[in-house]
Amino acid sequence: MRATALLLAAAFVFASEPIPWRVHDTARPRPPLVDPGTGVPPQTPGRPPADAIVLFDGKDLSAWRSSKDGSAAPWKVENGYFEVVKRSGGIETRQAFGDIQLHIEWVAPDPAAGQDQDRGNSGVFLMGRYEIQVLDAFENVTYADGHPGALYGQYPPLVNACRRPGEWQAYDIVFEAPRFDANGNLTKRARTTVVHNGVVVQHATEFTGPTAWKARPPYQAHADRLPLGLQDHDHPVRFRNVWLRELKPRL
Image (tube, rainbow, N blue to C red):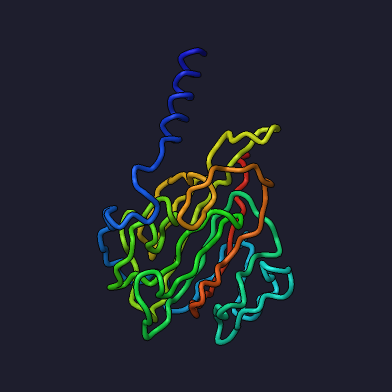
């Protein structure tokens, strides 16, 4: 038992080591480019799994609400997608979730406008706290931990698998929520695997804590289940085919 305890303690210490780069460090190596190939996502949205919770079926945002005041989601819906409305604020699901498998498709504006982080910028906020970056990084230079598929401000994607502006892209995300004990102490970090256009860009990567701008704050205890959020970053990014599966303990 003592040897096992020591191994577990060592593993936790290793996982807790700080990232050896400043937030948004421009000297940090950028992820290499990888052509994601064809077929992911398909030209038209596919059919979700039978046990999926459909968060957008191409018709309305009834599963969503304003993150600011809980009113009806203010983003635009048309032609089978929904689009960020500039300065309207983020949106979040009406339902709360913990461990999930999430599928979401998005497209950056075409023609492209702006550069660096001011180009096709949005974000997927797991539990409303842990961000997977959405950004148009096709022939667009930006800092490493701000690329699409990054754990924003923490870990860059393994590669840049971004498609051209105007081409639909897909994220498939497996997320394990953090765990806290009865006293609010962290016992397990949040962890995620992200597949971008069929390419693994994060593999069981642990969040250092919640996402923040130019900071890496520590974990703070929160509910086991919280809404999923999408960010309004003043860019008309579009989304479609959004569904998730709740991941439950093995029987």
